[in-house]
Image 1 (cartoon, rainbow, N blue to C red):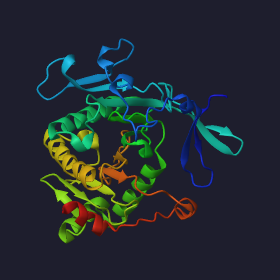
Image 2 (cartoon, rainbow, N blue to C red; image 1 turned 90 degrees about the horizontal axis):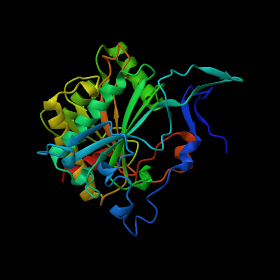
Image 3 (tube, rainbow, N blue to C red; image 1 turned 90 degrees about the vertical axis):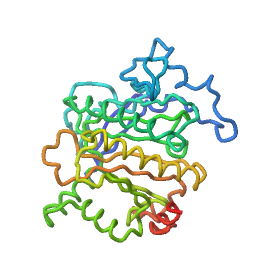
Image 4 (cartoon, rainbow, N blue to C red; image 1 turned 180 degrees about the vertical axis):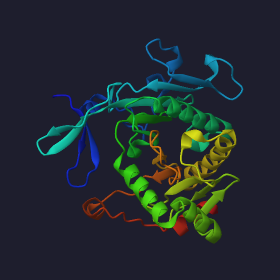
Length: 332
């Protein structure tokens, strides 16, 4: 089979899709995990500190640790990336009436040490180190000349797309603005031009006043069930203070974000009985100068339901539990 790694633009919607056939070569370690957990001896992320073949981009010791034997986080290039690593900026080219770009970029894996301790079981200071690692690599990749967007994701469970059950996150640095982010940016920009204020700040003001969909808050962050949730039990975390860029948060914000994540992910683990979920950060593009209108945030989408014809054919998400019920459920 011919290898294809390309960003292709839908001529009708203007959305980009990624065609990456090499992903078929990636081994799946989730086979039979539901009935028989993957042993550490077969886990590709266990013992990576002993491997001489892995290129470690960044490592961080566990709280109180001092050297590599005490590592809590290691960040590595993805062995099976969906994009081809390159610092050459891909030109937009024509293919008949269509447009495409070579699928270049950077894909990194953020591995936490414990084979079993996922986010719902981590201590707050352990989560804070993960956030710091996210920030560090985000800032480093922002300097790459061909990177238009950086997406930080965490897939928990096979239904969420994880192929290895060992807890890990990923960072994608790519030469396009993803469709969902583009729509979010355009909606935020439009509201700002029409109302002279941030749409997410307006949402937070309303939500904190009503409190109906607020799940948890501390000094700097609020956790809520969004008014127009896309999936059952969807949760978002917003900084209370207006900030466009995740990579700009300080130590106090990292501390409170870790606290908010610890609270909500432990609730999701206990109350929903450890469901598969996707977590990701939406932030302003690193090279966009006029992004003051945007308000970065983190989204968590449990993978409980399966999309049907209405969702796929009409693009209308059908959610079987209201955001108000979601907030009440998690507050209890």
